[in-house]
Length: 210
Image 1 (tube, rainbow, N blue to C red):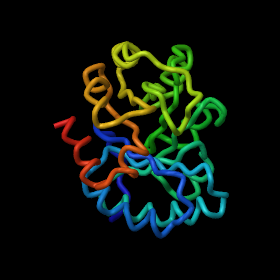
Image 2: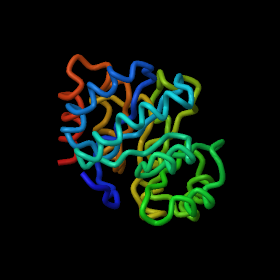
Image 3: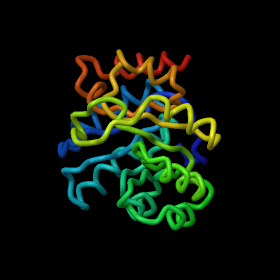
Image 4: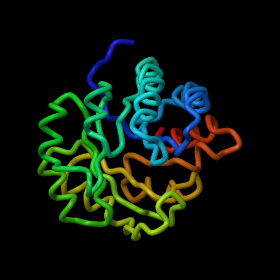
């Protein structure tokens, strides 16, 4: 499928686990993408630069075929090099305005704001397409992440007029609390990829947005 400008929908924001087995990751994705998550973020803290390129090259055509935008975590250069649909940046990942300029108007810029209101203000001013807050709950991926209050989601949505993503410790059981608080996107790794039936779990998240 040819690339089109990404459309940011509400729903599951699926984030890849730290798997170095590219075949395993690529084999699992078609069933997950068939559930129509809003976004797929490629994130792998165990992969070196060469492996990241290989894995993104395997994921990108699957995302194109499914119509699911692919964003790259923490690596603007890789996102631009591979032609991904956008990038997600944390506090140590470079200047947000420069990233917005490099991406242009047709790719997505997501920004981790943690529980920091000034960072959310800066991200919105720089032209971020969505603002992410967390950890909303204790997270095995980032166990030392400070907690973010649920009220921050609704406050940011009202103040900045753009989608807000919730990150950290999200399960299908606590997800309704986040939806009620105003979350447009639910960023999930373990509760999908470690589920007995990952596709069924991904679909359960999608039904929260019906």
